[in-house]
Image (cartoon, rainbow, N blue to C red; front, side):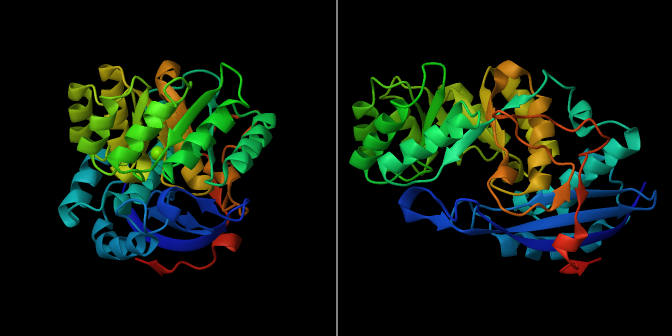
Length: 366
Ligand code: MG
């Protein structure tokens, strides 16, 4: 099979809550997402999506997705979409780094491979574990009482796992953590995610002040070394996210005992092919995972569902249904959350059909 065309679409995804705020005063109100359609000489077409969390989260931005695709897409015409190893080696040869640029193409090719095999992508990624996937809800940074109220509301919708956006003023962050934990039951999971927002002295104050609380601490500081320093001075369970951008970093963190859980984002690692490699390594290392992406709509949510559903349940710390955070649907067939859970489609491929009335004309095509 050969790739005959690659079409790139852009769509704005407004947020249900109006805005999403995290550490250091950073905030997004409309997400700029990019959808890739890969067409083949077999008559099959696959789809992928990449949506950075604005330009100030990871070294990735929406315009960069499309600029990078303009660079590599013309040189992928004729490549075999059912050979993910060969395809990824080719993309890495054509463009050094920039994993997020390559992610949507890789996901679209898994969609094609699944359709060609007559199997859902989760089957190709290892097989389906359990009936569904337990989700977490990210709670945008607000004053402590508002965050506690938001958690109580989402809990009524069935969520039992919550990730608080902290990384603000340490005293207020301590109040956020305590106010929210007070609304939860013992079995509920609470994560305080600073998204690199604290300096070490601030993180040290927070972990000391909440040392008696049942809470996970996620990515307190900017660098791995700073996070490791905080990890070594708190007994609280510890998640690394932003710095886990490669297999090397997973190996380093595992060797140092630097965390208990890692957060794997599909576009941060460069697509499903590379995320599967890291996911399987984490299973061997005994590291549980949050399985998600930087953001996105229906197609990203479908890819997350297939990745998470093909991960053994005890290793799934949690996953995310990003399409429930935005007001716009860009594809039919995507997972829909029910009672804080979602399931991967049983249709061949990703199981999604993009809505081209919503996506409009491609911004470019080759
Ligand atoms: Mg995080």
